[in-house]
Image (tube, rainbow, N blue to C red; front, side):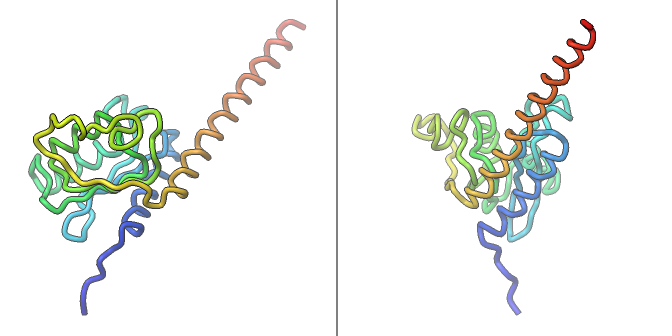
Length: 173
């Protein structure tokens, strides 16, 4: 009996579940896992607000956990990061330093994406380590998760403004 080798889509589903945990805590729903030797060695979700840490992006949290688990600041040669959103500049830098071998991401990040969207950091030639990457894995599902979150957030803000206006009207009466 051979062990089942997960597909990129199956691994991305785990990252998607991490993103759902972020949304439950009011964080932007981005999730990540790091896989080595067909096992998850690190997982994380966005937590900058709840942890009061601007660096607590899903990728960074997953790198920290993976490095703690393997007791090394460098990831294994076969380590692959699955993340629901294209990494930003900070996260790409951390992934370079951690020596990730590959990144698979879901949704494109048109404002801060640093692999293919806004910046193509590896085209500069500055890095001493370059990893493979591919985007679009479960793209629709990851994009919808983010869109639904921001739609809910806009509705909450609209309701809050409406409530503030109603309270202001009552105070003037």
